[in-house]
Length: 241
Image (cartoon, rainbow, N blue to C red; front, top):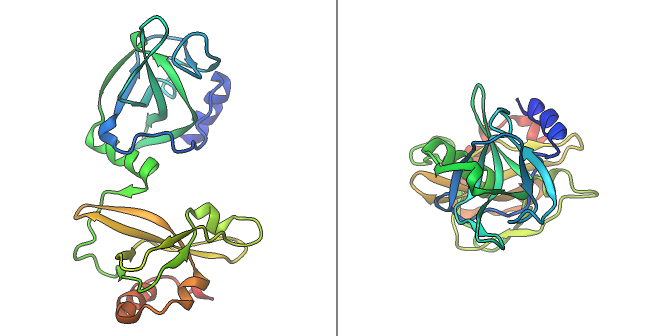
């Protein structure tokens, strides 16, 4: 599915590559947008004077459904435009892919509605690193509260694929509670990174960064050691070879 979109995106002059942080802070401030016309130009700004970045069309299953900022912007003539920030596809399952840069479409070529629950969950994951799951009574979760700041990598890219060594460019603040929940990741170089999450509420967690194995091995988890070691025992031994 993703490969098909990549091919069509190239043909259409647009790309689904990952974007920067161009999204509203909440899915409540985003819309589902459907293109209702054919061969609609997507612009670099809210107006026809801006560069054309690609095309969208109701006839193209890979280029007609988007996530947009809920607040439109008016052009110089007073016509509203919507900022597109992600493409939505659904074949065997729903897929949400960030655009490599936001683009704009005039409102008279689209119809909009609120994001449905499943769409909002996908968008939360893609843009905000939020997963809609409950950690309550889930076995094997490692829960810990640092007594001092712990250095971590802000992203998996910084942890696994930074040139030379992982980039420790973030931290877990002392006194806050964090969780080891998902499985570690490992690069061909042997670098191992452990995703770290914080609990937002009873039904949502957010990934806050990645801890290297070296930092993990050097941590004194104190009173939380049993919980953390219980999580570690559930992971494949190859992560600690």
